Length: 502
Image 1 (tube, rainbow, N blue to C red):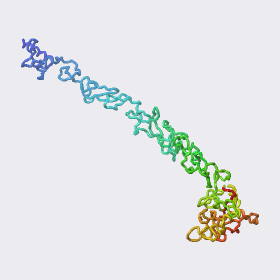
Image 2 (cartoon, one colour; image 1 turned 90 degrees about the vertical axis):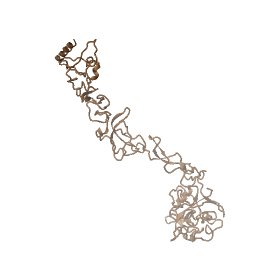
Image 3 (spheres, rainbow, N blue to C red; image 1 turned 30 degrees about the horizontal axis):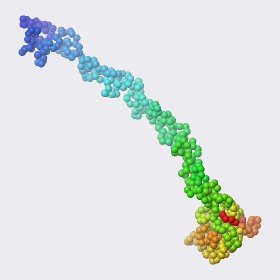
Image 4 (cartoon, one colour; image 1 turned 60 degrees about the horizontal axis):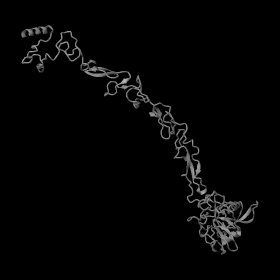
């Protein structure tokens, strides 16, 4: 019986072209395993097919499918399927090459992207398919607009941008705008990306506008903000004089300048000179200034308590009772080196050049402006001689270096230099009453008239001699020096007298 079954199966295998193998097929009640191959599971480890573990071969004509089996029993598994290039079975059966927004192909058993769907790009190898959606389609050359025009994943990259536009920015030479070019930038809220003029420090402009330079300046800051060639031209008072509100010596002068605390306005910059006198207000003196800050310069009003108190000497001897300038008259703005120019009044002060080149009427007027007058002949001589009736202010004997006469050399060494010296500089040239320079330095007008010129001009005695005068003319009594009233000489000055105290 067993032999008959074996023969029958062998004939069938040959008929259907199946491989002839010496397997013993047992009935269910027989022992399936033993020392012979029986195509049962016991023989799987030996490489022999187990009759119970796989499909029974199908006769030729069955269609092969990709399933990793030899469906048509031709000895070739999945024949007809190119798993190295088939996008539907790439590398293995059923593995379909597909990716988002892309066309995929199979290359050597691996799915790869052959092309992206129009409008997409593959920029990230870690992401499947063509993950990047192009902002513009079709892509175009990159421009400054905040958009990835060329679909490369980068926006407005400098190396891909075109050249900046020209002729839009203000580039006026010699102004803060010189050399300005356009740059690609994002500005404003919300941000707008485009070409903007890169104006530098000092230029006033609206950064949200490509050429946003202002038509006129809004900031007073020392810069030419509108690049018109003039800094801060909207503030026309810049540089004008201003002050702290004080008057006289209390006034601190300043100049209008841009206010550093508020650049929309100007202020009075008091750091410029001249400054207020730190010692003012103080007692008024004759110096060309309003020392007590009352609005009156060198106050000459003899009835005003705030007036200048002139330095005068009271002559009260030999039957005289009057007041006389201690020093030769000088201008209010005189210094040890300059005579000055102001002529509103006369002054009596030390160590300044005396007032020369003055006519009789000018001298008389300068004294009258301060409530005084020119001295009479006898007043002048009494002040010079003193109570001791000296020949010279300092005594009865001539001394060539005591007063500034011909014999005194004002510049030591070399020739005899005869020049005027500051008032009181000859410290020993004083009278008994402490009046200075009554001998030498400058002749002094007195109201002692001695006739007229042929033109009718009054002639007055000038007393005391001057720096060219020899000793005879330097005495207190010498009254032979005379001058026409309209004479203005560098050797003639004056001093004032008064019947009352200064």
